[in-house]
Every structure is written in structure tokens, then in C-alpha cells.
Image (spheres, one colour):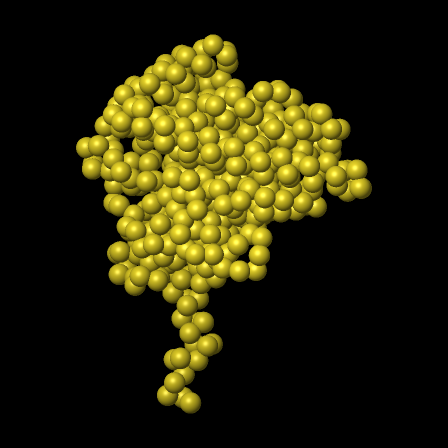
Amino acid sequence: MLKNWKKHPIAEGARYLICWTIFALICGAAGGLIGGAFGWCIRRVTGLRTGQPWMVWLLPLFGLVIVFLYRITGEEKNRGTNMVLASISANDLVTKPTGPLIFVSTVLSHAGGASVGREGAALQLGGWLGARLGELLKLDEKDARSAIMCGMAAVFAALFGTPVAAAVFCIEVISVGVFYYAALVPCVFSAFIGTGVSRLLGAEAESWTILSVPEMDWKNLLWTILLGLLCAGLAVILVVVLHGAEKQAKKRLPNPYLRVLAAGLLFAGLTFLIGGQRYTGAGTGLIGEAMREEVIPAAFALKLLFTAIAVAGGFRGGEIVPTLSIGAAFGALFGSLTGLPVSLSAACGMIALFAGATNCPVASLLIAMEMFHGQGLSYFAVTVALSFVLSGYYSLYGTQRFAYSKLKMETLDTREHGIE
């Protein structure tokens, strides 16, 4: 018995905990520094652009620089977040230029006001960090996957200040129905360390307050069910529009320089015609308006339009924050029409749309708990469950895999269901 003590579950667990705790400390600290620096750059260029609205006309120029950078580094076919997810589910490689490229290109996209987020960049920066550390430590194939998820969680948490949700999201998003428990400890540890380091650098957590959370009576339950159903439909529309716009843009304008130039000019022109910067940038301002119960009827549709143009053109950053802002604007409109408290409806709309578009219901509920200080859990549970189940097999991420059916207790084949 003593001869086999190294194979005892307690001994194996101890080795696992020690090794991955050390890795999480290193990865979390590095992820916090990278995320903190990245967040600082985004805040600086956003503040500059907000004070100088004319900078939106520089978006076409910034787009040309982005395309040039990806071309000279041989990364024209870099699939961004999809590549990082595939590195875990299909053993694709996270290329070495990915980290620096997504850092610079996302900052440039935000400087020009493109309707893109930061989370795609966070996942790519984190995946790149985890992959490089895995190579440095010569981890085997299975441990390398955990290392990539660990890096993703660290940078994602550093940017958003939601460590629990970040850890779970980076594990849950890979394959729907499969939870990689082996990565739980390193992801949780690195997420909290990344958050702590980024806060030392001045980063603040994303959070809002729901102004009113009434008791869940039968009337509010019915309205909440309807909101969840509508968010499921909106999630499908969102995915189809974003992927469809990108596909059509590549078909009609195969030259990436012409494509990004046309998208940048169209985006700037529409911004000028509408006036103001409500639909530029990631969309946190639009979320704030919705949470303050400022209802703008067409806001969700216009934000979707601006996001589709930015994504189709090839601007970098991600779609999650724009998705949250679209959901918040839609939820606020729903609340104003039905009598459900507007800020509560806005909060449910943003989280439900996120759940439907990313197929991550557990992470969605955790994001709601961290962003909204634990308010309104019963409302979030209803809308998230309905949006997740009824949005089908659509996903923002084309390489996300559906291992289990959403409707039956059965497995699916492992092919990708996302729209390319």
C-alpha cells in the first residue's frame, strides 16, 4: 500500500492543488497586469474620443492600420476568440502574434468608436498568455488546455471585476453541456488574483444597481416569462445578423482593406447623421441609460446595426458588451410597455440576451449576481433559463460545440453548430 501512495487520490489531489495554485499565482498576476494595462488604454482612448467626437472619422484609418498589422504578421486568417476556443476543444494553436495584435487592434477600434467590446480581446489575451506559459513550462496537451482557460479567466476577470463569473464562463463556453472541472481550481484562483492585481492598477468592477425589485407575484412572473421568450428570439436575430453581415461583407468586398474602409466610413456617416455617440464604443453608456430607466425605443435595433457594421468590417474587440447593451435597451423598452420596473427589466434583458447568445446559463446567473449585487435572482433565473433553452443552437462563437441537447437528456454529435 505504501508503495502506491503516490497514486492515492489524496496524494494526487495534493499534487494537483500545489502545482495549479503556483501556476494560478503566476498566470493570475500576469493576467492582472495585462488586463489592467489593457483596461487603462481602453479608458484613455475612450475618454479622448468622448471629448473629441470628430475622432469617429478616423475609424476608417484605424481600420486600415488593423488590417495592415494582421497582414504583415501573417495573421489574416486569425479567427480571434474562435481560435482560442478551438485550442481547447480541437487542439488548435493560439498563435504567438495573437496577444499583441488583439491588444493594439482593440485599442485602435475603441479610439475610433467602433461598436465592439473588450471581452473578445480579454479571452484572446488570456488564451495567448496561458498558451505561452504552457509552452514555457512544457505542459502536456491536457494540462495545456487548463492553462489556456486559466489565462482566459485571469484577464477576463481583470477587465470586468467579476471573478466568479469569469472563472465559470471560461470553462462553460467551450462545449455546451460539458464542464471542465479539472480547470476549476486554477481558473477560480487566477480570476481572483487577476481581479486583485487589476484593481491595484486602478481598474473598477462593472456594476449597476436595480432601482426596484418587486415581489415575484403571478403577474410579474408572466411578464418575466414573456421577456425571456422575446430575448431568446432576439438572441437568434443577433447571431444571424452579426454572422450574416460578416459573411456578406467578405463575399461582396473580398479585399480586407476595402472592406474595413467601407465599414468605417459607413459607421462614421451614420454616427454623424444620428448625432451624439450613444451607439459608438462598447455600449456601457447605453446600459447606464437603461438602468437609470431612460427608455429609447429604437436603441436596441440601432446598437445592433452599428455592431453589425463594425463586426462586418473587421474591427476587433468582441461582441459581448454590445450584446449586453442591446439586451439592456430592449429590456428597458419592454419594461416601459408592460409595467415591469424598467431597471429590473433592463437588467434581465441584458443577462438573458447574453445567455441566449453565448449558451452559458450558469455563468450568466453568476454575472448577474456580481454585477447587480445579488438583486433580483428569481427574475434572472426565469429569463436566463428560457432564453438559453429556446435560442436553439445559435452562438456568437462559431467554434463553440454542443455536446448535449438543450431539450433532451441525450448527447449530440460533436460538430460545431454556430453559424460561420
